[in-house]
Image (cartoon, rainbow, N blue to C red; front, side):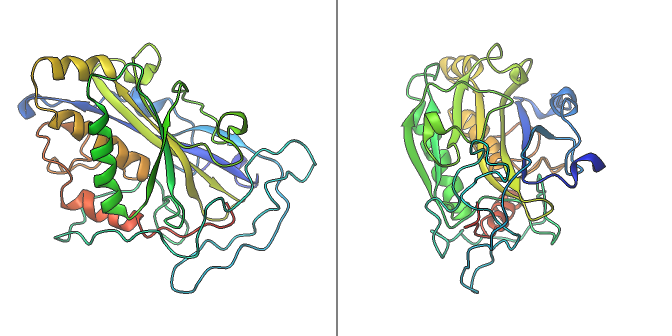
Length: 311
């Protein structure tokens, strides 16, 4: 249920997350630990949103125009991210690298399927996603990555990019550590833009949400002006390096690691878990067969999120 104490504060953002565990035998599947979800605050009516940050400023400005051929968010914007009280900028200047049209087009799924869910939706029923009119930058903390793991991430990103039409840009390595309260705007580290997506090979000690059988977590931060539409602006993906390294060292096919990365990137883009075990967005990965029809249809819808020159 919505928290009435949050409805009138503007602007604001929140982070949606989820997790996956890998199983090798579907007959032994058990439900993922509820603690992965229950530690969150109740924000926008979904208990999986965590890490809420509030901003109490944001001078109103008319939103940037966009061609009628593609949807755009329509709430009042802001003046270069400057809070109304004149304090230090809390969010970056709007419209960084935003174009008038989507940078790519999502591939049409080979077959129709309704076996998908979204982590969050807007008042018009459309899913919360990333603007397709700007690139999604990402950085990788690979200090603990298994040997030759780089292609696993790159190939998974290519698959997601084709399914959504979102253009990804690799900004290179980073030393940033994963955090459940990661700031979406880190001017000192990344400049005057939203922080890039963080992909971190890590451990349960660094990322407690990976404890137990959970092998990966992922999610994104959405931002809105008051009660206006929400859009994702950045995210993070954590991979349990010891577990995946052990799997690879045993000679297990890299398909399992790829499936984990694809599953978590699905969460980053805005997909929720589903109850259909044939989909990759099922909470457990038993057979790593890649993205299924429901996954592809959900990602296709997310690729049609509105452009956001006002963010």
